Image (cartoon, rainbow, N blue to C red):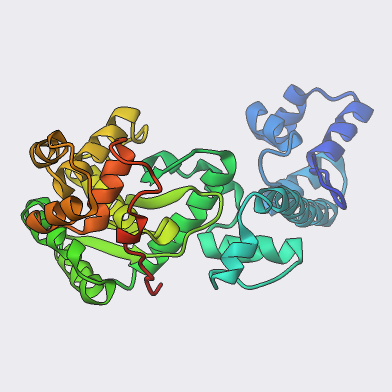
Length: 350
């Protein structure tokens, strides 16, 4: 028996059981009379198997109740079962839908705007390409390697919504077969792009990564996700999604190389997700790629953090000045309110 707010689906087996009790028939004797196994009769009574037209005819012979009665009972049960199950799933999905940042997703044009809970569920099912939102909870969030500042339940659902959009957008980006050796070779060239404006580097960066089997997607930030970027496999390509959280150029480049680090260090698509050690390793990859430890230590050893000194160091290392400022701030060499005018702000078209 399956119940919902509006429906009660009772299997025909309940009526069969009543008939056996009224007649004093055991299931063993009944199965012999029906010419069927006792196990099948037990499953029929418990509603675990369908009452077929053949069984309906047998029931008419043994119990004297017309086959059409049993066929109608089965049809009614199946109809109510579908309706009760759908209603229960809708009720459950309405609660799940509340966990997603629907208003922000709608504002970004990812899903249609609506205030009706049932419509939100339908639109979210289509967006995630599932028949029930409950399926999303079984999807392995852990296989997404990402850089975010905090982890919360709200952030997890925001990440799922964001990653799905990255996956959908990545489908329209043609890529070559995955080639990590080529990616390694391109890293120095990608680093040089830090001194360019987004209008100059965006297409070039996208083309280079697509040649390595990587689809690069730029997406707006979703509130509550604390997300800078995410990386995961989707079929025969790798998807890298980036957001300019805070629109700081230094954060953008650090996030990009953090995600590329996850790829080259083999952190994505692991059954149990990335570990804290993996995240630290990806951070170190990004730091070392942007500014080598040797060069950074030599600069900080001089203990001269004037504006002119920072600009000269950035120029000599062919790196965006704001990246040097961000590194110095992060590692405590200068205060966070120093030289922020040297940091570039990006506005990416997404």
